[in-house]
Image 1 (spheres, rainbow, N blue to C red):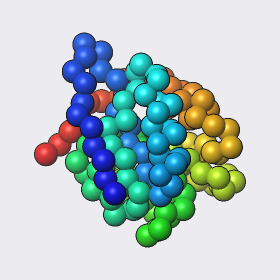
Image 2: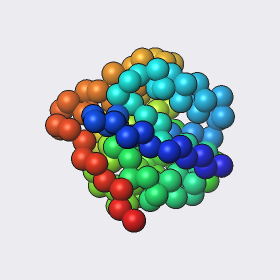
Image 3: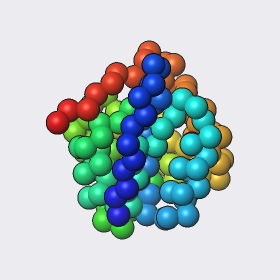
Image 4: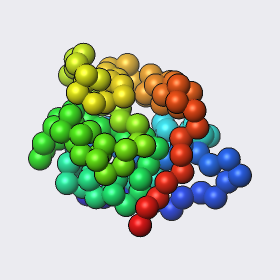
Length: 140
């Protein structure tokens, strides 16, 4: 499953986020919560590694929020592929598994799902602030 939405044209563009998780309930919940934050825009969702690679290739987002366990692979391997496809995309592993070494394997951050979406939003803002403004990039 891949869903993409059209980008908003604003004088100060929101951070573009792609969500990759195989649980529709999680995808919809996180998508709805992020929609409440004015400087974040979910531009696409995917439910597998293969679909995630496709949307990353198409969207070149500022952030990819990736579940650790996906039906066709794991989030760490997907993060490595995202790094090759879109080096400027910040990657957050969003998981129910205590994955303390996720950052050592290439993710910019690991957020435990039990901490809810507010911690995810805080993490996106901290990563944005630590590296300056995220570059706008959508290669074709």
